Length: 148
Image (cartoon, rainbow, N blue to C red; front, side, top):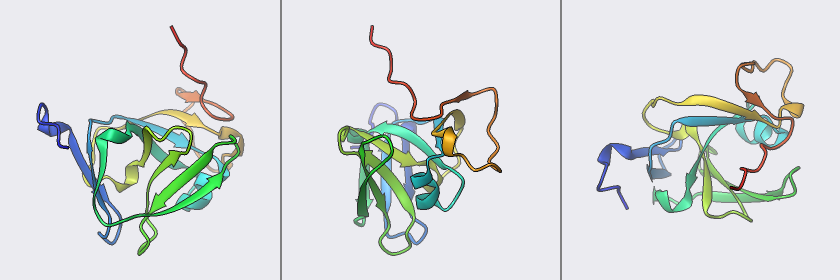
C-alpha cells in the first residue's frame, strides 16, 4: 500500500504501548481541533487534535484496535478506535462516511509540519482552552464543503 511515487509521503504511528501500529500513505499538514464533550472525554484533554485522510490511504500494520461506537451530538454514529491494552486513541470514523478516517495526530511517530487550521464544536470548549483567534472557529461542526 506504500506510495511508490513519493516514499516521503508515508507516515507511521501507533499507540503508547506499541501494540497498534499504522501507516498513512498521504502527507498530512492540517489539524482540526474538536472541542466536543465526547472528544474531551475520549482524549482526556480539552480537545482532540485530528487530521482527515482517505481510508484507502490508512492501514493498520500491527494489532487490532478496539472500537467504541456512539451516536454523537451531530446525529452521526462515531466509531472510535483505540488500543485495547493502553487505551491510546488512534482514529475515528463516521458510520455514514467510512471512506474518511479521522486520525489522532498525537499518535504519529515523527513530528511533522502540522498546523491547526480550524476549531470545531467550540460551544463546548473548556474555558481554559486557548484558541488562536486568527483561525476559523465553528460552534458546531464545520460547514459542508461548497459544491461547484
